[in-house]
Length: 185
Image (cartoon, rainbow, N blue to C red; front, side):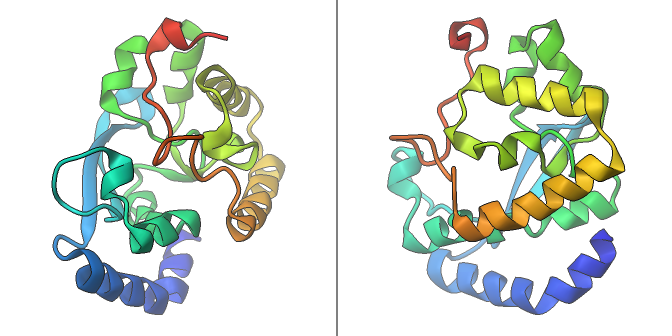
């Protein structure tokens, strides 16, 4: 399915790559080590959305990058991660490596499966969710995953992207950093 999506979306991906090059410069791709299944690191690939330089993420996120994020076009290269077996189409989103030691035992269960391009937390509020709620939805997905649930999440993801809901937490370019137990509800 990821291969078919890559082929079908390749003209769009080329157009986005050209836009990133013209608006933000090089490199076109943002690459970052993220934890996969069992916390094993892999290199996540996305289209770059921020300008170079110093300042907060919000300062570096310009109009074009904001458009890519709001439409989730920046996520399209993650289909390569799916093809490589590092990610699934559906699963908990791969967060930052620095968060691994901050998860409690239950939250760590999110790493029992491969991370996904989309997931239950994304269709339930995306970055509008507080960390405890978001991580709980990831674990609920791990505990209840099925083909029917995956198909529902994929369908609702399309709607969420078109509606551009939950793109960023209030006052953040995306979401505030996870701080572990200090983020508990």
